[in-house]
Amino acid sequence: MSELKTIVLTGASRGIGHATVKRFSAEGWRVLSCSRQAFDPRCPWPGGEENHIQIDLADPARTIAAIEVIKAKLGGRLHALVNNAGISPKGAGGARLNTLTTDLRTWGHVFHVNFFASVILARGLMDELVEAKGAVVNVTSIAGSRVHPFAGAAYATSKAALAALTREMAQDFGPLGVRVNAIAPGEVETSILSPGTDKIVEGLPMQRLGQPSEVADAIWFLCSDQSAYMTGSELQVNGGQHV
Image (tube, rainbow, N blue to C red; front, side):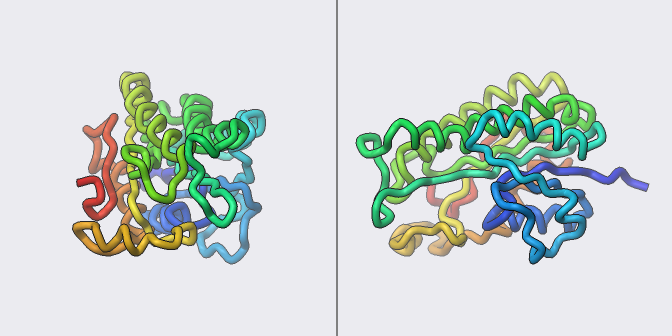
């Protein structure tokens, strides 16, 4: 009988995270979901509430404290850690926050969720990842490599930093048997799309929004044996937006 594999997934409650839970559940994996919200009983996957960890990644102390809670649920082995949680604050009326209009507290808040939490969790769960020869996937963004009309400066720079962190982690975790890669989604059809996204989509080579399930498929690939010789890579999942 094959081993039951386990994934820890942050930002699990909506969009790409929600689709990723469904993808891994369909493959027979146990999913430990992490989000700011308590478990929603409407979520359709098995073992949901007992496998849910409520965690505010904006608070470093709470993030560190949650590691022990996660470890207790793992039982020594972790096959995949997917750092998907991300926040992109807006100004009044949904205005883009640029380098001149983003206050320092907001910068810190965004970086704690989008960047620091990823390395805190990976380091904290390193023994379990090494034991399973697991994989880490960091979810970056198209906004990490260019100025985006809606994603703010703090979000964009945090995602650029996360891409660099992916390379650094790949270098450090590789000798331990753990692979670290990233995916950079473009315009994906979720609840956080900004008005005007349709104008961006018109200029894409594929001329359509991506679906959360398509991003989840890429995450699955990077956590599976199909990508066994890949580490330090960042997959562009954006309909050609990067070209």
